[in-house]
Image (cartoon, rainbow, N blue to C red; front, top):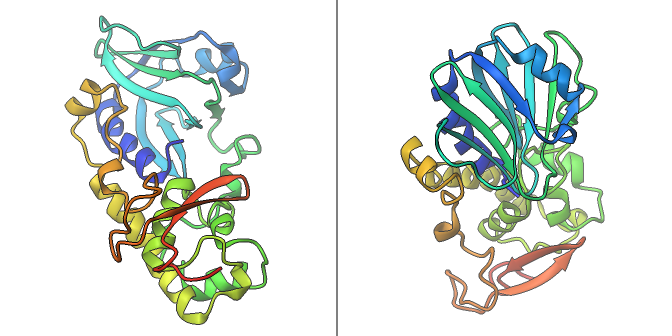
Length: 276
């Protein structure tokens, strides 16, 4: 599933290219992809409007339109967004196509069909998408050790599970929770109520640091993004532990271990990240 760095990359690639362009036609081939309102109404309302901007909140993309409407998109596990010449072959499982005023098309494809759009009128409360329940952005200055310990300091949940709670911090998923905990030298299965003050300090420092680092490493030109069909811009070469089970720890050489926490895979160094 794309996490915050990947979604931010899409925003930076797609946003500047579509700003000012008008939706001449919106085709929805899988009506269930439009979660609110009905697909027909969504197409009718957006046709003729221009893109005013593209924002991000957690893992959500937010298309802002000249008429004041907002279109939220959550890519979920396999969603992909491409801005492409109209004559270019479509990706398999293309479900939504925006035909734009410059002759290009903005296309949404999704193999597993879990991704969803929500269209909101100007001023309409978002009681549909779940974005209103999101917690702090990792870059928010309010994110500090006291904030985290206040939220999780009494919890017996694994700190890995806590980091995946989008209502506290938005945008962290399975990949970057492993990277954050490795950088903070905290075992992913450690109960949150067992963290020391020093560990809360390290965790609060590493969350924005790691997310900023991976956003930077994700940088890609629009041309390369389109050439790779939006699928080859991720941080795999820079990941320290995620996906590296059995390989030497980059810091101490100890073989990295894998465990399952709350149904999610987690890779860690048993030496650098200490005991549970």
